[in-house]
Amino acid sequence: MLNVTSLLGSPSTSDWLRYGTGPAPPGPRPTGPVVVWNCTRTCNLACQHCYSDSHPVKYDQLDGDEARAMIADIAGMGSPAMLFSGGEPLIRRDLLALIAEARSHGLNVTLSSNGTLINDAVARDLAGLGVRYVGVSLDGIGEVHDHFRGRRGAFTKALAGIRALKGAGVRVGVRITLSPSSIAALDDLFDLVAAEGIDRVCCYHMVPAGRGHAHALLPAAESRRAVERVFDRAEAWVAEGRPIEVLTVDNYADGPALVMRLAQTDPERARRAARSLEWNGGQRGAGGRRLAAIDWEGTVRPDQFWGGAPLGSVRQEPLSVIWERATPLLDALRGRSDSLDGRCATCRFRGMCGGGLTSRVLACGLPMHAPDPGCHLADTELTGDATWN
Image (tube, rainbow, N blue to C red; front, side, top):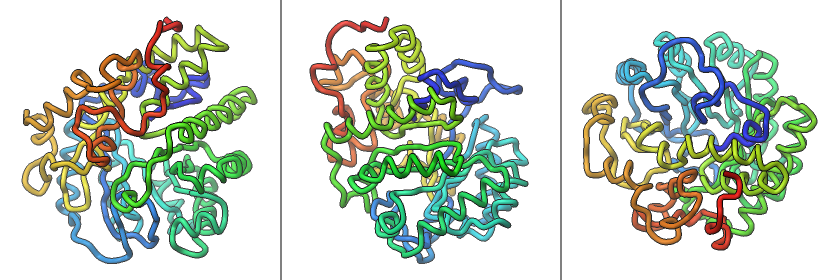
């Protein structure tokens, strides 16, 4: 996750966790991973790119007692935050109770939703529980979003959910998965974010998992053009003093692209951005280290897109045990950035990127140490002097 606006000079309260800069909140430093819990596979929509291949049917999932035990263990690990995702998490009837359980253990809670089930009452409940942030997915305006999400009226309902959250004082963001249709609507989506006073916009790169397997990765040049458009809007908002965070997610090549862009106009800021990104490490410090994912059945993975062998199950033993036990798979995952093949092996951005998203590498049928096929950096950009140092 690249916080573009932060690296452009508009700091975030999470910079201490993401980049090792800025003041940390009071209390002990986190010792465990951020945990994404896909608390249900059931969803009321049928999104074309759904990585969990969710449908409006009932699936097996952790029950309330299993979930409470898992939450207590996650808190005991010293995890800084827990993200409730799905399917559509608000379909779980005990969701608010489980969020309350997580908050009672001191966990920061965020929610990922399609927004269609959020009304004023739900928004007030989320605010009362101290939910830190809700991300609502949009893939276009009006019928474009509805087509992508497989339900007429989904856009109107999602926008109503966003407005309800804003009215209740909950920090809210728009999540955009970069696809041909959403890229075509990118300017309109950014205009909507500004007009509605939305706090954050996150642009996600496609990972071919679940129904996402039906979608080809964007060509590198097209992906890079989209990223540069995101940077353009972020720069404009920072210059205007708008308090809108802009992030890109699931492609560690975005960081080097931003550093090279800054090096053309503001070498000192480029140097600061490079130091922050090297501290973060990209994939080196992500899935399998500072990020864990647990699905609806309790299966543990390095991240929510992982299609490889599971790391274990919280139905059999706690996450804290799974995470600390040395296994060949975890060792290989955590050591991947130190044994990369191909053009990653000599790339000057290796310390910032860590070889790209491992889950996308495996999803594309490549060996673990291969370069991320989603990398949009040109071969000529991977070599040369680090002029921002």
